[in-house]
Image 1 (cartoon, rainbow, N blue to C red):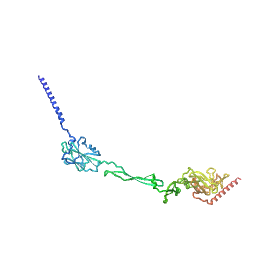
Image 2: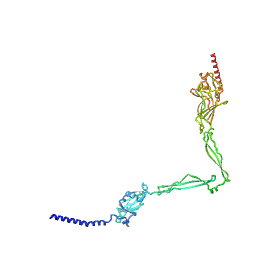
Image 3: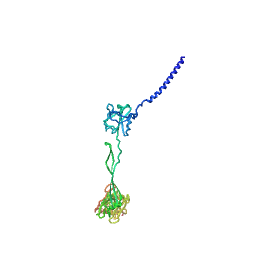
Image 4: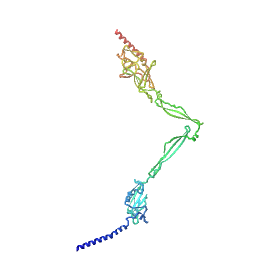
Length: 469
């Protein structure tokens, strides 16, 4: 029996609980739907209290997102950097906690050039947002949910950079001057362009005009119109003189020419002007200049006489080959001795001389194995001979054959195997023993010396013949 009583008691309790739940649940739901919202909408209380302290801006609803300084850096669309209102150099809370006042903007700051935005917060209902706030002005804190001005909780300030306005196009002006050239029936137009560009002035923060730049004149031509031709004087005659060469000297490669230009317009007096130009000298003209001589002498190479020489061509002259020189020994009484295709410098075997065996000398011949003097074998070259050097330019000088005392002047007495007739002037293979660029007159003793040599030669010959008989 007690067990049955307990079961009946439990069933009664469960029933009471279920009934209570059915009654309470609708009440809870109804209470939840009837509860007021946590935050009013913008339109609900977006009004400033009548007794607001400070200058009012725009009320912007508070959100979790805009509760950070960097949120506001895109608010105006201008470049800016935002800071929490902690630095005393930026500003401070004033008006017994109901306003914020900014300090003067410091132009030495590296960021921005003005105050761009001020955001004042008071609780979690509204933000007072002021665009381009001014220093020294007390700006109001926003109202709270009750509609009363609230104490400043924190604030943000943003430094902005003034965006430059679009750069204006450069200012360009043109100045043209037209001249009619009636002789050529054309109009010459000279155009000059002046361009002034804009430069950004960091001090005044605006574009200002720079320095004008003037272009080089541009000259164009066009034919004269029929109307323009009527303004030209009639019978315009232009005559040109012949080009005339100026003065040039050897060593020049160009010459300046001048000519006269005579212009006669109608019945007016002729106007004479002068034109000049430069032309290159021709090879023929340069070829009229003489060769430039170096050392030119009769020289001994061992016991053989040579002509040693060195020449330089006039400036600008171009030879036809590397061996352009023709050397001529001028014979005053007969045929000249000519050697062609020689280099500009070198040594030439003297006329009548031989470097091979049997060796020969000018004015000597071999008779029965012995050297004998002769009027032949270029003897005319021994007493001072004029030598001409030719390429196209020419140069002539008198060269003296080596003196009788020189090793290479004469053959040895008695034939190719005998002792030389004269001792060498100096030791060595090369001895300069004859004349040079300046003419040298042969001394009268030279003839006497030659006669003496002939007598000695004949006497020696007779002694040998007597001995054999």
